[in-house]
Image 1 (spheres, one colour):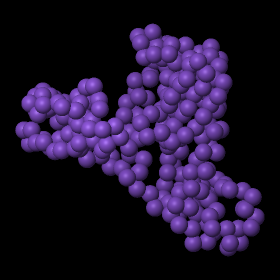
Image 2: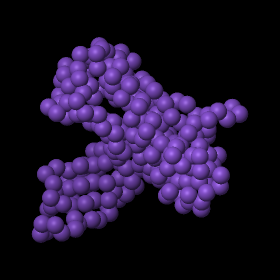
Image 3: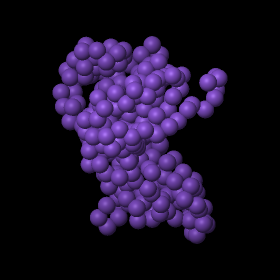
Length: 253
């Protein structure tokens, strides 16, 4: 196969398990079970004989079934319409969404992209949007509001832990990430946190902050690194388990 050509893809079935096999320029066989439906994919080096693929799948059948059971026990992906009445969770607080058209008596709110007001039994996030706003515009309004909250909450959490852990973050960034809750560049002392953490319990944000700040002391995931995490946050395993029960692929179908 020439460089840049589409990888070769086929489907094999082993002991009742369908596996999508992709042959491409890789060094090793790599088997994955993908949420939310438990699709099994295997990437294989070019020229891998079918017998080697069959053997690997048979050896990992128990692993495949175990991961599929775990995925089936998780909630289904969330699909939001971004309409008034939907509820979101922000650091454990349930918030009711309310979208209001700017053109109907909302002139006073034009300089305020969003506000939080008390509702009957919960907080309501009021988000002004153009009259007749599409789902995408409503989604963008909520995303902007979430980012403003995240900048404040994430910065406060990092500031709370810096003196405790004896480290200093030079740059804190926030972005949507598909596979990671946070990243750290120890040499630049730069930390990125996933915006999705804002919609998880506070303990999850705390754990990810401690995890990333620990990398400023120990760059890898060696026992020394986990010793730092354990020393500062003995309950980190519970928070990590909470994140595992609400993985990033649940964000939106």
